Image 1 (cartoon, rainbow, N blue to C red):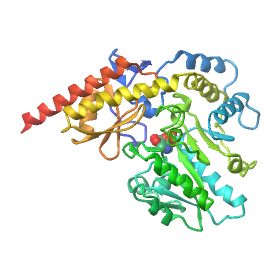
Image 2 (cartoon, rainbow, N blue to C red; image 1 turned 180 degrees about the vertical axis):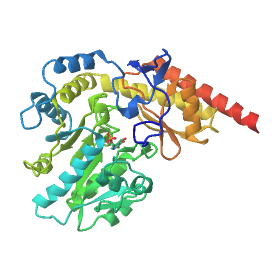
Image 3 (cartoon, rainbow, N blue to C red; image 1 turned 30 degrees about the vertical axis):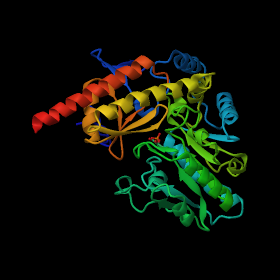
Image 4 (cartoon, rainbow, N blue to C red; image 1 turned 135 degrees about the vertical axis):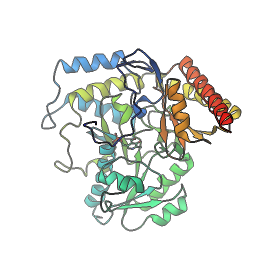
Amino acid sequence: MSALLPTYARSGLSFARGDGAFLVTEAGERYLDFASGVAVTALGHAHPHLIAALTEQANKVWHVSNLHHIPEQERLGERLCAATFADRVFFANSGAEAVECAIKAARRYHFKSGAPERYRLVTFDGAFHGRTLATIAAGGQAKHLEGFGPPVDGFDHVAGFDIEAVEAAVGEETAGILIEPIMGEGGMREVSWPFLQALRALCDEKGILLILDEVQTGVGRTGRFYAHEWAGITPDIMASAKGLGGGFPVGACLTTEAVGSAMTAGSHGSTFGGNPLAMAVGNAVLDVVLAPRFLEGVAQMGLRLKQRLAAIVDEHGDVVEQIRGQGLMVGMKCRIENQKLLAALRDRRLLTVQAGDNVVRLLPPLIVSEAEIDLACDTIDAACVALKSDARVRV
Ligand code: PLP
């Protein structure tokens, strides 16, 4: 019996090391990693620049706490602000913490603006924002809430991406609207860019805040630094994590000056958040992701992946019925059970991630090569052929 809480359905695989887009078992079997630890290892495994940054910092100082000034944290904060809409950043250690900070900041903004009654957020059915008590309430999924007592109050869920339904849900107590630009866990459901623009306009009209959860979509994953750039809008608050640390736990809540200045000393905090090791790696990730032409490369690879997958839908529409997503955040909506496709791919040494709505997610590292995309697509093609012939044998 394992000493660990049985909270995860694990694959049974374990890996001894990784390089680039590959993970390698103790026995030397190489798996093409199109999961990236659920969109985390943005620069693949054992990226030399990240290793150098982490090692260099490890030789200096690991942790001092936020009782002190942390130069690497200031630097990463300034760089994130320079590259985005934001004026202020709070560093945390995970996506859920980044969203938690976003929720608190939204409430606090209205409190400080003389409207403490505005504490509720409009959120969307099928969303995923993390596993803390507040973020499971924000997500609103019964399977995540079950057994944990009354959900945290303050979230109004809307079905579908329907601007009239959102308008109807906004009331006197609404602080803002919280949404993922592409619902990752929820099945790679794309929120249309016009819908995001309409949400921005609605927030402006009602004097409420637009809060984006870019934990999965951020840091280049869609071919832009943050996905909302595709829509040509900016949020008031944004949660980021996953790829930001390239595999080292880093979360960040980015805000405008108006929102950020409401979070005064003592209003929020984290012992580990923004520690020197995490910040050194975060800065090193930005060195690569914000280098000229890197994001164009991600967008190009994303197009190639989608084109190859479109051919697979044409050929094997009875296994994969639709391709979703943007850049290197792609979902295959399955006609068969998604777990079956995922297992068939794993048997062929291609790692992917399941998502809601019967989707298999492809989240390759942002440094993936054309040859690796082709290898993944050849593997998917072979798995589809095998799954179909298995089905025929069973009939
Ligand atoms: N928000 C989104 C959109 C996510 O995809 C996730 C994780 O999958 C989270 C929040 C929670 O992040 P973490 O697991 O790092 O707490």
